[in-house]
Image 1 (cartoon, rainbow, N blue to C red):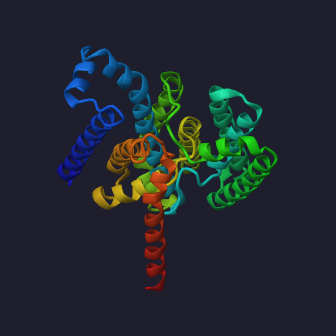
Image 2 (cartoon, rainbow, N blue to C red; image 1 turned 90 degrees about the vertical axis):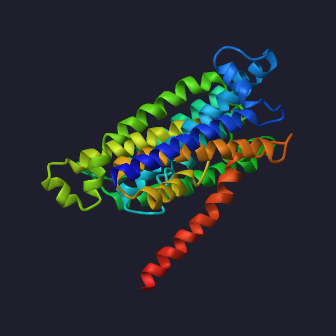
Length: 329
């Protein structure tokens, strides 16, 4: 079994490397794979180097880490909440980030201001949802889900009102909420990627604990696991990863929903293997989705959220039908 999982992990790494190289090569100006390798080692011509290092590489790196972060967070949220349809946005993080971004757009705070406001607003939303679901030292998962839904509805209504009152900025708000990496530069990577990377490693440390908790919290407590502490850490770290991802790339749906499911079907439900496998596949998926977003209707770039929704929508319906059939049986 370990050999099989190692094989699948190796294959996923190969897929990720291939997707990175392919995405770096494809575009309005095609860069041969040999030139990409030369540029990596300090060679290549100036034009190809500028296109790769200044335009394509930042967005490819951001897309890869965003895909990884959303997939890992989605894996933990689905396991923790015991809900196969949970994703990183289930706690209202996306609506909170969209609210902050909308304020920044209306006030004309620029790109950095937009990303900063989205990140801060997402964190405030997490805090509010967490406090609403806290019962003494414990956190109620059911209350947290309901609080997330309520906060999302409230934030969405305010965003709609802002769009109604600010017609000139409406298209910018809508475009941001669809997600994309067209405005990513190295400066954004330096403050988003470390949070996502460190957060994913921190979550992975609790893979074994989550395995035990999924069999039952009472069993986990008998085995010496502080379930409330683990829950809090997973929720906080997963939310930080999601907030950082959303602040840079906007709201990119379904990645955190479909990649954990696909990974679970391939490699099983042991989180020690599932988490890295899901993260790697999520990175490859979003890199390829971003490549399609900038090439499928070139020179016009479509939001990457449209690509992920086109893949995720049918898969979500499949989950609904599958769960319905289980209930009937």
